Image (tube, rainbow, N blue to C red; front, side, top):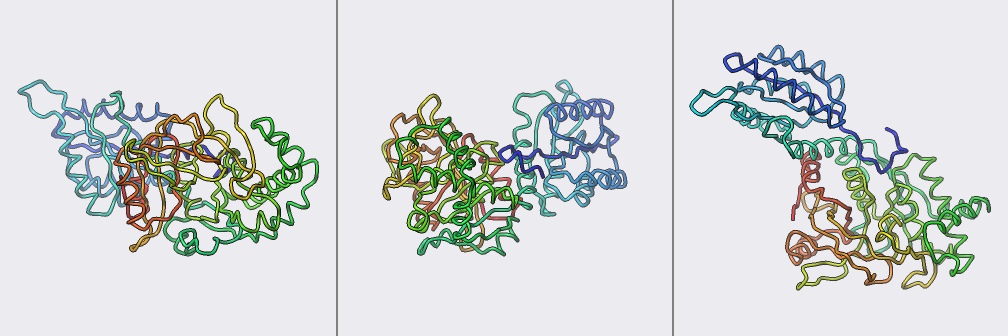
Length: 455
């Protein structure tokens, strides 16, 4: 895996096959198979397969063995005409990937026989594949139709993200603060269900490494931060230098250990023993493409990874701090750990002191508006579960609370969302990212075989 493209969504690999029966319009079906494969290739995905029409289990088996050599994330199965489900089952038996069935529209004139009966064939195959435990989605329409591939895109991105999670590695710097039970985790269960590995790092090691960062590296980190933000020059110079040193030390850790991100115990040792609130440090690392969770919330960091890899955008971990019943919104806030790329366009991005501890360095700006998705990977009574809700981040030019604030209007009732979080016993941090990702999150939960809670 190329860990340099950290925020880029992983590219899914597709296998393509077509099934048919000779008693239908196979010449037309063959033409449509060629158009279907070409349409998939135009999307820019790696697509393996050909336009041959598979008409028996033996042909399906041979095709599947060849396709599985490519280790596809999704099997796209075109039901070019009606056929029984045996070929779909045979293909799936050799390709351990979710299946996206594709049913074509009927081309004949009114009163003619069914040329293809493709939709019925897809329905028959879906039933059989579900019984084998396979995750199934479907497309209905002819190549070139607008929006046709949306279900496939969600499934493919979820499958590629699942693959990447299997090799993901996060650094845990310190441990969860006392009483923050929602930030604790079972490392073995995390590896078994999700796949994420954990590299443990002692806080003292980070403080020692930061104290040994060369002055030139600290100067460079401060200068590059000043180029993108404002306010550093007004802060305590010693705290600003500690900000630069901590950034360099943590970034070196991420690179040396080939980590995808961090969950950091950001208090009380950071302010008490090192003289820094690391909020803006984590935000700066997030700008570099590394996910960063405060308060050593490892599951929160995994949630950030999921959202970043599904969307290709920078996510943020936050607290739910207010409900406005009349406006149908909840306020999401944290004390200044947002990356600068999440600031409202064209506005100043100030860095300042922590709202409670009154030392540097933290961000102090509102989050940019637009469509968004809120999510949380957590652990419930029956094991891992994934909550998600689509909605919109409102345009709030005034930062409501010192730190970073976003006002989220969910598509569901805001009170319902809050009820679910609190009465359902969810961990207190939630993550959000730009864009709508509910379909991909639903598919990912199915692929991970964990409970999904959609709002």
